[in-house]
Amino acid sequence: MRIGHGYDVHKFAENRKLILGGTEIPYEFGLLGHSDADVLVHAVMDSLLGAAALGDIGKHFPDTDERYKGADSIALLKEVCRILDENGYKIGNIDSTVIAQKPKLKDYIYAMRENIANACGIDISQVSVKATTEEKLGFTGRLEGISAHAVCIIE
Ligand SMILES: Nc1ccn([C@@H]2O[C@H](COP(=O)(O)O)[C@@H](O)[C@H]2O)c(=O)n1
Ligand SMILES: C[C@@]1(CO)OP(=O)(O)OP(=O)(O)OC[C@H]1O
Image (cartoon, rainbow, N blue to C red):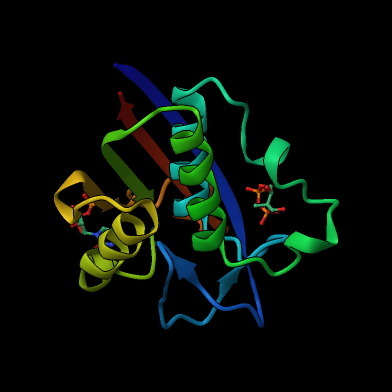
């Protein structure tokens, strides 16, 4: 059994969709990135790659590579899960926290869990997504961006 941890941050920008956990969330700002900037899925991918000691998303999907411009992070997650499978690993469970002052995410949590579970070929009960604010403190509190943490167990 091996444990993994992932962390990511993306800043808010105008004229971008807000995609979290493969779900489009209505909000006045989206997140800036080379890909769709799905900060939650990025943290999940880094936790899985970390658990397997197989590097990180920047190694597998460089932000200098045009192939990943505007990439659907759920498709990248499928590729990470294929790499884990190829290396003989199975996912035990994933837990994650999105840190966002706004928007309220509770109505989208189930859809995010479902998208992540489907991409990984696991049951939704193996995927947890939580949300919290930082009580208006720090860069998330100032509405500058969103961060996410993820941990996982692989076997
Ligand atoms: N972007 C967010 C942040 C929080 N929630 C939900 O609200 C609860 C209370 O958050 P606090 O930061 O005030 O502790 C939290 O446990 C989440 O259920 C949310 O939906 N979206
Ligand atoms: C996901 C990738 C894909 O090019 O691009 P970004 O959306 O910029 O996201 P980041 O969290 O900076 O990770 C780097 C890249 O792997």
